[in-house]
Amino acid sequence: MLNVPTPSRAGSLPQGALPEQHSFRHLPPNIPCPPQPDSGINLYMIRQVRFDKKQRVVDELIRRIESGLLEDGFHLPGEHQLAQEFKVSRGTLREALAELKRRNYIATQSGVGSIVTFDGVALDQRSGWAQALADSGALVNTEVLRLEAVTRPDLLPRFGTDQFITLDRRRRSNDGTLVSLERSLMPATGGLEGLPRVGLIDNSLTITLAAYGYIGERGDQWIGAEPLNAEDAELLGRPVGTVFLKALRTTYDRQNRFMEQVESLLDPVHFRLHLQFGTMK
Image 1 (cartoon, rainbow, N blue to C red):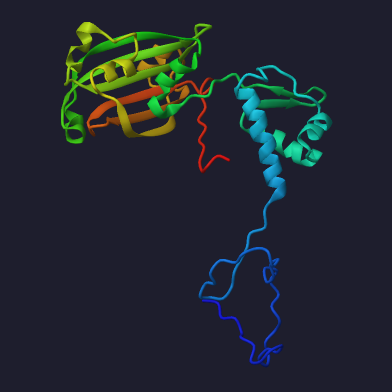
Image 2 (cartoon, rainbow, N blue to C red):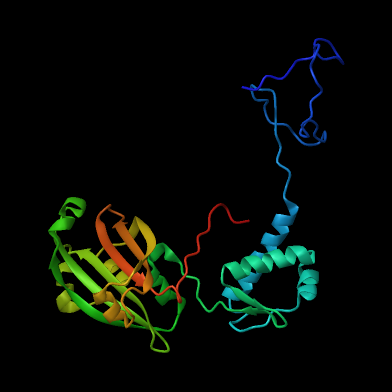
């Protein structure tokens, strides 16, 4: 604990004590003070105005880009015009553009300016990325590679069963490029054991699971990256060792039953991870 000398009488300090040198000593009288901590020292953070202005520019340009107002290939106005529009200095604007470039929303070229390079679609991950992709209206084609019953003794300790239904799918972008490979496991119970015979409802696993009473309530998802092995490389039409994003998502339903584990391999050229935290204002 930091001990602060206490004046021995009004207007004086103990012998040998020096006046305080920190800059957090005085506050305007109209700012209420919180309860005093035991140490007798209160620190107040000074608002970082420049950072807030930069973030405001970043957030607004991202909104315009992701909503399609500024499409892939669009040339942003010059720095002077943008700085005037957002009422910020050109230095703050350059910092905002650098952040957008770092996050792959734009590219900058000397003599040309800033060009929008984002061609993605924001995906709501609460129902899984595959369903989010379908909900977004993105132009993709899905091919079912396998839908059958399997026995997985290695998963018995974790999920309480070794009988599963597996669904393997791969997806292509509108130009025919293979962009993802997805392997799902569901418990072979509650009617799901008949899926290999009857198939999916409306070609949607999420709708099918809901029809059988499985509605996702909670779960977890791990995302990393790893090189493709020989089997996956062949299925995705890529050289062995090509690095793909790998997502592993486990979901439990409202009755706390295990309902799905899905492993997804995603082409990083077409997919990016964007996390938000805190309360949006």
